[in-house]
Length: 352
Ligand SMILES: [Zn+2]
Image (cartoon, rainbow, N blue to C red; front, side, top):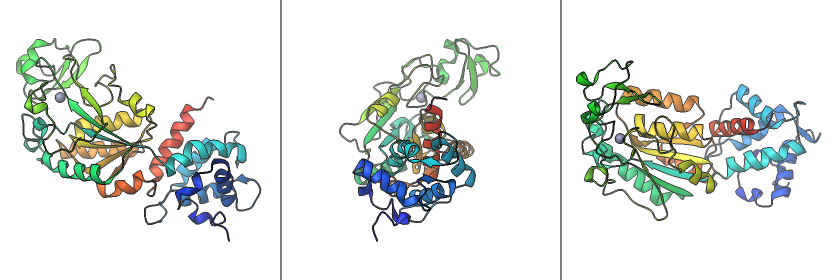
């Protein structure tokens, strides 16, 4: 019995993907159980059960609605079957990415001020200890072969509008419930301008070239990493490593990840419900399959962290423990949420 015939194990070894046309045809044949030269929804379901498995080979559950939606992305002519021609796109743009993702590890703002400085998360309501992310991230860097590693840094000038000490320097919009004269730490104000900007008032933090802006001294720095500095425009805040908070200026991270063929973005760092969360949400919006490494993050508010996680999962992102990441990077643990996310991206990119 040939390996190809054993559809259940088809994606168990990555070597099948090495000779393009033969592998693609073998895959199609393996799941075309009734040999009618086309894949029905049921046959496609069989393919998905072989594709979406954990590291131990156990299939993940896949909702029927999501299965049907993914099927419809590849059944371009909407005849209820995926034929060999339609399967080409399914294979090259979808299956290959699911089995061989290109990964980026984005380490967000592991800076002194957020750990033991002026905006230390230990003083915020969740009372997290920011330094606890450092050994987890270091071990991930030591043991997992990410294709790209990126470090982001909050990098503010002295006159930055997010600092409570600067609240009188910027014009307030009439809609702001808190007026400049009454504004205090952690209040939300609305600054005038184009666009009008909601802003939480933080203590001065991560001032350019200061100790507080430096990365934690024990954080491992790898060669050839990408470096993203953000928040240097005094008039707008920038929580995400991709864009400022109004999505006007772009840090270039998305372009650099695309240039390197990245499909999957693993996000960690500080703070979960602020800069890590904003980075993960923008990553999803940019079309990357996005994973938050929960134990490599620390946050501000337990309630906001929970809200963020729900947001991420609702948008087909995944929350995992760092111990699960290696097999995901290697394509041995293949999550249906991420496959679904990619299928939706392919659908939306397709001309009508
Ligand atoms: Zn900041």
